[in-house]
Image 1 (cartoon, one colour):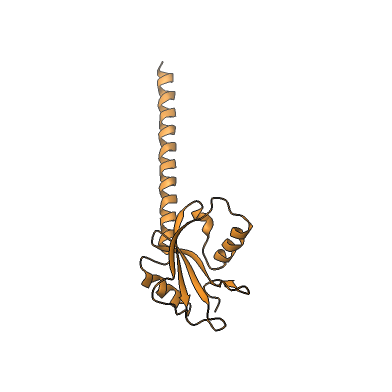
Image 2 (cartoon, rainbow, N blue to C red):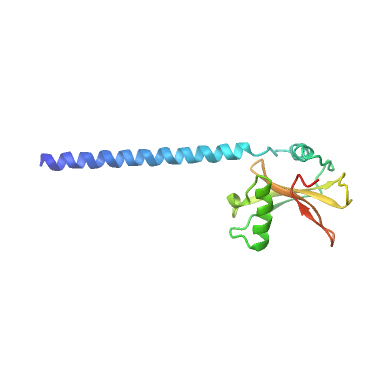
Length: 149
């Protein structure tokens, strides 16, 4: 009988140690995820976004041309995979936001050297910039990252 009680205590201790280890692991993952989000540029106001774009040399109108909520797809098709490849080139990764609803802001770019009809599109999630592009919607248009000056 004493052996059974002793074995159960050992099993209970191992179980408790395992649970504590799992909880610590989850807390560390949550802390790392929070640190990644904190490393993203702030975008709590239009001025924050304009300042972010200005760091790349872009001058944009003070008010966005459009502001809408969009959902990042849960599964990326080829077009979204290519778009996310552009995001990864500039240090973002939209796959972290699959199925999330994000804010999309479009600002008219005032100083593009080639075209007058250019827009800066910025994706924002919980007050942080998570991606975007500089593009022209013309038939012979283009799309680049933020540093595509």
